[in-house]
Each structure stands twice: as C-alpha cells, then as structure tokens.
Amino acid sequence: MMQTACVRYRHFTTTINSTSMAQKVLNILFIGDIVGKPGLDLVETLIKSYVQKYEIDFCIANGENLVDGKGINEEAATKVFSLGVHVITGGNHLWDNWHARKLLGANRNVLRPLNYPAENPGNGYVVYDLGEKGKVGVLNLQGRVYMQTIDCPFKKADWAVGRITEQTKVIFLDMHAEATAEKMALGWHLDGRITAMVGTHTHIQTADARILPRGTAYITDVGMTGPYDSVIGLKKEIAIRRFLHQTPYKYEMASHDVRLAGVYLQADAESGKALKFESFMYPKF
Ligand SMILES: [Fe+2]
Ligand SMILES: [Fe+2]
Image 1 (cartoon, helix red, strand yellow):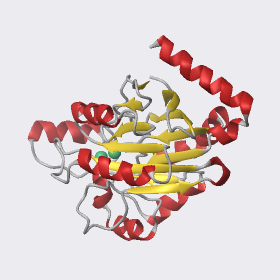
Image 2 (cartoon, rainbow, N blue to C red; image 1 turned 120 degrees about the horizontal axis):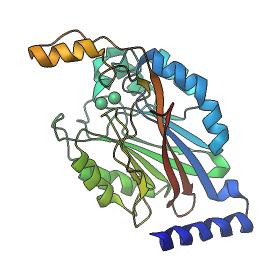
Image 3 (cartoon, rainbow, N blue to C red; image 1 turned 90 degrees about the vertical axis):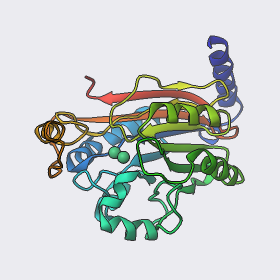
Image 4 (cartoon, helix red, strand yellow; image 1 turned 135 degrees about the horizontal axis):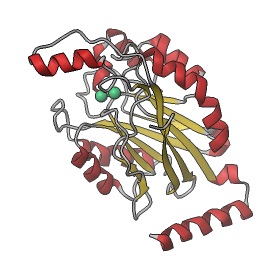
C-alpha cells in the first residue's frame, strides 16, 4: 500500500512541476445528506472554509432530505447552488416531496438515482463542464437491498460509466444504499473505472475512506449533515416510539447537535484516478 501511495504522490509532484496544478488536478468536495434547514444553515456557515482549505474546484451535495428531512424543492435547490454547489444528488426520499418531480424534470444538475424506472422525471447522471479544468461526470445510483426493487445498480453503472467515459475519465458516483455489502461490492466492481464512489443514505459516516488498488476512492457512507441529537435526523422520542409500538408516527425532524459530514477528493484530471481521499465530520464527535 505504501509503495502505491508513493507512486501516486510522485506522479502528483511531477504533474505540478511540468504544468500548472489547476490544469492537471481536480479538488472535489462532497457533502453528505443535508437534512433540513439545520443542515443547510451549517453548510452555509462552513462551506467557504472547506472550499478554501482544499482549494475546491467542484462541489457535490446529497439533497434528498433538504426540505424538512423529506425531499427537495426549487427553493432549497436554488439556495444550495448559491452556496457554490455544482451538482445535487438524490435518493429514495426525493419522491416524498411532489415539488421534486418538477425540479428533477427542469434542472439537469439535480440528479435522481439512474436505476429508477425511466418513466420518472429527471436524470441519473450529468457531465459538468468546468472549462479549462475539464469535465466531471456525476452519477447517482440506488441500492436494492432493503430498498425499492428498482433496476440493477451494477448493470446501470456499467452502462452509465461507458457513456460518461466518452466525455471524461473523472467520474464521481453517489451510491445511495442501505446495505454495506452492496456498496462495497459495487466499489470493487467499479475500481479503476471511476474516480470515486461514495455511499449515502444511512446517515452515519463509516471509517473506511480509502483508495482501492486500481485508483477508485471509496467510502461506504459519508454520513449526514444535520442534527445528531436524533435517530438519523428524526426526533429520537418519535423513533423510539415507532420501534416500541411497531406502528407509524408522524415524522418530525430533530434540530440540535448539527454536524457537517463530507469527503475531500483529489483527482488526476487526465487519468481520472484518485490521488487523495479523506472523510471529515465537523464538529467531530
Ligand atoms: Fe438521506
Ligand atoms: Fe435515503
């Protein structure tokens, strides 16, 4: 592992010396599921400091929980874009808000998982043109284990990666899924063919951010940007009652102990390989 890291680092150093860093390296920030106004307010407070710290060129955020924890609308998306986010990814909760359908049909930079039936509005991937810095492909898929029985994410990934690779080798995947094994298997399946795969949906950050042997950055789940005095965003008293009584109770979002969860990725803009990858949580536990 150390040898591989050194080779990558030497390549990175060579790149800096031979031409300008901005042309060869892309710094990408991904923010995990933003839950409601508390999450969005913290993003607004902190995003500039992360953009400066990592010299971010491109920013992605998962927005499936933006409106009171359930779905997304145009107002919330506009706010997120105004903070410097280039592409918003989604997941199963997008569909909880009827306004999301209109937005997905109207804005190609708001994604929904590609492997939902094609009759649903919206796109599952986009290739974003950063001009001189190149293009970044962003792909959104959803798992099928303990979730909706939608199309196979592995086969959809193969198809979409083929399409995106025609335009760029820098490909970032948000795999929105419940099961660790499904995410890990897809990470190995795509190793060397995409720049990064990050998991979302569980709202709890995993401690496995790493670069796989063929150059794909991987983390099982980025975690939630939202209130942690909760059960994955839901008021904890309501969550406990749901489990005790085994019947539904109205969703009410929590509001305290708000933290930002994200990952920083540095990509070789030409080869599409990951050079650096790290997760962060602020404030730390
Ligand atoms: Fe979520
Ligand atoms: Fe989700």
